[in-house]
Image 1 (cartoon, rainbow, N blue to C red):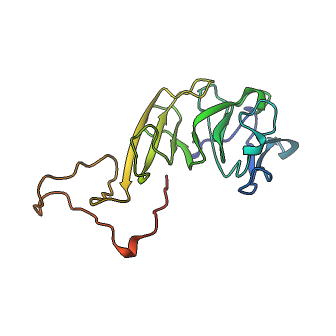
Image 2: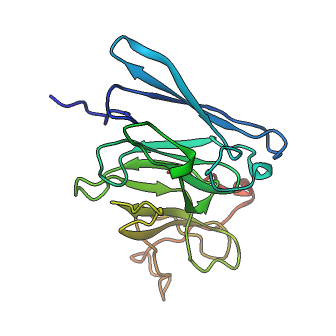
Amino acid sequence: MPPRTPLVDFNHDHADVAISSVGGWQGTTPGTVTVIYGSASGPDTAHATFGRATPGVPGDPQDGGRFGSQTAAADLDGDQYTDLVISGDGNAVVLWGSALGLHGERSSELPWRGSDVTAGDFNGDGKRDLVTGDIEGEPDPGDDLFGMSVSYGPFTRDGKAASKQQVPTQREFGESAFVVATSRVTAPTTSSPATASRRRRTPASSGRAARTV
């Protein structure tokens, strides 16, 4: 029986492990991610460490704070090698798996910054997808729109998804602040009890809600 969780195997031989060493908020303390490759007898002594200063990894080393604060491992391009998405300050990057493992020279930049990320097959087509805790391209003049972006695989080697879907889940401020599960709700035209209820902001809810994926 295949494992319930897809095996993380960056070079397609044995299970591997990626460990983040998250730096400080300032770029002077950059974060790194260390990959420990597996062997037939367990973890190998072979390993590689990646950061913004690694040759080929996009981004300025001075923009390296919190690099590795979020990671997701999945075969994004369908070549049977696990790839590694790394998020932090600056745009997220993806390190592509290969027979030689992960390399900075083969990495790509993704079009979102510093948000939560998780991988899975969210439409049941057998391809690996990514969900990030942000809304791309949605008008948000009040900076109060929360939600997620679903990027459906397979991905090209330049980091482009096959398609995308924006899923707003909450608008925090304003006279009408709706919390919805999967799609945007249009404000009702009447105040009838049969229509969707409004969730108004109260002093007890003055804190800004965290975004989760």
